[in-house]
Image (cartoon, rainbow, N blue to C red; front, top):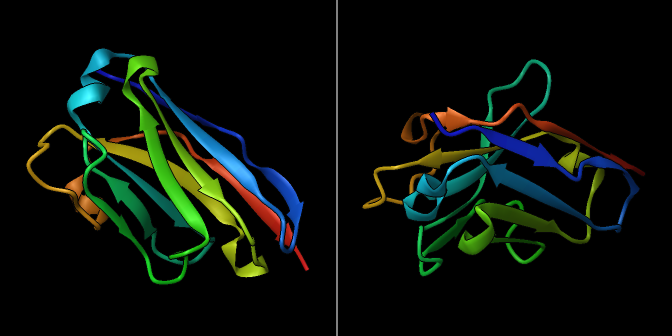
Length: 125
């Protein structure tokens, strides 16, 4: 089964930027929808962004629209989340996930069946 490994998290000041990466262990990533979610303690995991396998369809949560950009490099089996103009409320553990039922670009956790372990993002005010 394909495995996902996130990286790129860290501590950044408000207004700063981070780029998260999601490396997949198998080529099946190339034909899978990719999503990014985030979670803070005591809250449900929430949708951030999603991208179709061919990068033609994107969805963003309203809270990140215009600040975050999801992208992918299928030749490298890697996805990305560029986060600009970060705010303290963006602080969370960020997870990437894939859905090999590539006919949809889902925005809920139930749409995805393979998840990474998460990477912590902390934004100071």
